[in-house]
Image 1 (cartoon, rainbow, N blue to C red):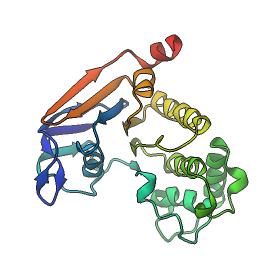
Image 2: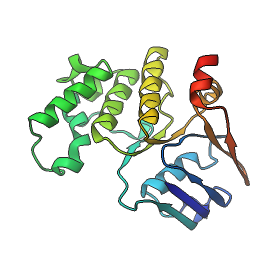
Image 3: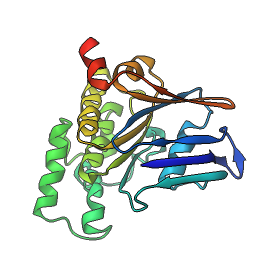
Image 4: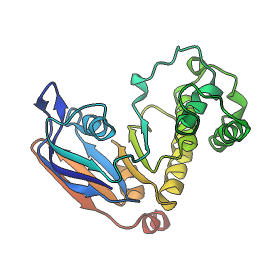
Length: 222
C-alpha cells in the first residue's frame, strides 16, 4: 500500500503538483494521467525514492516493499556494453546482490522472462542494437525477473509498435491479477479506459481520483 498525505512533489524545493491525498491499495492498478509537466513522472520518482517530497508524506507499507521501476526510454543508457541477457539479469539483484553470481535457477528465470516477451533469440545482443519496441520488451523482462510487488512504469507504451503494446498490456494484466500493485503513467485514453480500474488525474492545482469499471468487465465489453 502507498499512502499520500498532503504530498507535493517537484524539483529543488519547487512543487509542480497540488497537495495529493489518497491511497494506492495493495493489488490496485492505477493509470496516472494529465498534461505534460503536471508532475506525473515526478510523482513516480518520489514514490520510488529517487526524489524527496517538496512537502507532505509518502508512506510505503511495508517500508521495505520491493519496487520495480521502469523509467522513460529517453532516460535509459542504451550504449552501455552489456548483453540483453545481462540487462535482464539485473532484475535478480535482490536475490544475489549487485555483484553476486547468478546461479542456474537465476539463469533459467532470465531466459523464461525473455521467452515471455518473445526476445529469447536476442539474449546475446546489445541493447543499443534493438528497436524501441524490442528494448521495451527486454526492460519488461527485467521487471518480471525482479518479481516486485509494486511496479511503477513511466509511459511504457510511448513510441513502440502496436504488437508490443498488446503483449506488454497482457503481461501487466497478468501481474495485476496475481496481486501486484501497478502505477502507470499513460497518455493513451483508450488504454486507460479499457484496462485500468483506477485513475489519478493531475490537472494544474487539481488532483482527482477516479474509479472505473472492473478490469474484467472492461475487457469483456471491449
